[in-house]
Length: 230
Image (tube, rainbow, N blue to C red; front, top):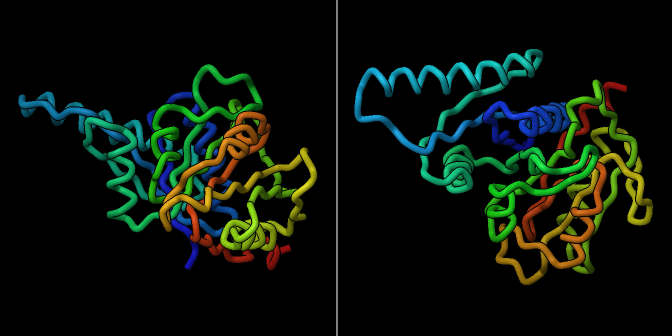
């Protein structure tokens, strides 16, 4: 089954980068849900209706950016953005949560924002992070995919191979200049959860391309849609 991806979205510039990465994942066959986490509800009915409308309008702008794609939208109410996204991922049986980088990140570089950091410490889904200003590249192409996996981590390699087959891309463990980096979790991580090694954290901090961090033991099976269409 093709992966299901949730894009964390509140209409910031970093979230526009997440939209672009979501589009790339959709090209590889993933289905998309655009999610906005509200932190409070209002006791006054008219104010609550107004804020509900504003949330739906915000998501509508993001969905229009992804106009050619079939995108679901969801408003989640939770005091914590990562917990709200985790809850939605469990409800939707989602495989990936997509983020932009922290707003202070230099253009072209990757830095997990707070919500992404929380899900990288034991989260139950893969986490994808776009570089800052990724949306400025009108049509990013995936030609080379890097993979960072330790011995015994077959699921990360299998995920990277599935993506390479989908994009018709080259898979490499050695090249530094790649268009997508797939990173595995530590073998000490609970099955199905994300937990990074110090080396993986360092590679992510040095990345200049989107990063996909895969839970331990979980293979994301992307259909070879682009390779077949070429």
